[in-house]
Length: 187
Length: 187
Image (tube, rainbow over all chains, first blue to last red; front, side):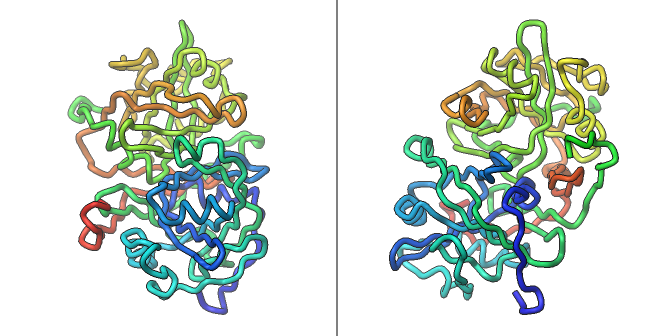
């Protein structure tokens, strides 16, 4: 991220704009002196306000422990040009390496959580654990986005969407504006 | 859907291929003599096997009642060329109209559930309610995909991904095959 593309605040209740399309995200977490990054494609918006996002975070993942212990994380949105770092993060373990330095990513200070932002990502959504009712049975965490940062441009970044088998599809280049066909209250 | 593109069975444990990228889907449901269709962008894969999908289905939606009563639904995957029907379905109420006839869509018989398949969609995933623990508090339904049907081609359909404000982004045309960079057990 260059200094000409510094981030701006974004309303947490509007993060559906970037998460509802279903991109691969990077989850960063911190507990005491340990931090980690993991890739995630299993997430869904659950509410506008409070801004809730549900995430499946396998207990096999080192990040799971850090997030349970701290009750916090950051959801970072990588653009498609970061695909090699996304793949490297998804294919390594945070118990063995520092995923920031191994992938030449910059940990920046968040505003409301201890977990670091990944500066090179298009957007960073600071999250607090909101409900752990399904963590024990499903590894399903319900987070509240308490602070959101996005790049000034472009409005719609090109994002990675995982189909399995090592294959990503891309979204963000083509758009259909159907707003004229919506009832105002449905927009 | 033309007769030359008849559907084939697809392994339910592999539906992540089509749902993990985050497309808008159409949920069809049936209870006694009533059926309905709704649009949905708030969903996530939760497990490969059993094949679990979590869906946020607002209690404001007529479909919510049919799905709670029947414990079943079908997740249908529309391609981008169906965008006008998707928008019309999302902007009308099933308490007032029959969404199949109003949108010239064909209800086909499912194998394992009473809810109808939408024949014109690329894929149809028959679902049974698996866990309703979060329905009361969040309108979050955990379904098991018990039978899956997909079109023979193309392998990767062009799909709609909703960003809010009446604007969809498209995915499915461009792919990155990074399988060579994956550890075999991570594919």
